[in-house]
Length: 126
Image 1 (spheres, rainbow, N blue to C red):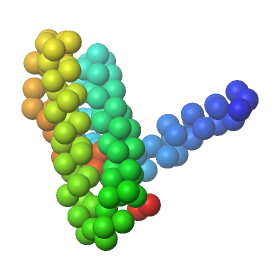
Image 2 (tube, rainbow, N blue to C red; image 1 turned 120 degrees about the vertical axis):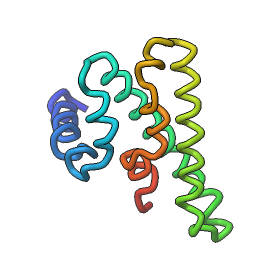
Image 3 (cartoon, rainbow, N blue to C red; image 1 turned 60 degrees about the horizontal axis):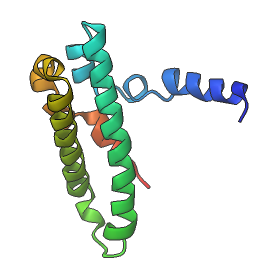
Image 4 (cartoon, one colour; image 1 turned 120 degrees about the horizontal axis):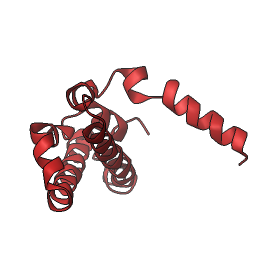
């Protein structure tokens, strides 16, 4: 991949395929934490981590557990459980590594669990 292709993907992911801008998902944590740079960056990294890992895991769960056993109707419940687990993991890591940041996040860190962007990213049609 050359630098032109990489730059094209990078710019399109920011301005065209951005979940917040294209689907208006996840605005609650974006608006609540975006007053200062450090907490906004930390929250965005936490949301990106949870979205990425939960999307990967939910794909595996859907492909290798729900489809073979004909349990597709449990998709949303399974995805919410995966997302909630990862948010708890991120919360524990932030509490251990950066206690001041954990205190600053307050209620907004557990709200990643109910963040529409995370659920939307994890439950796209396959």
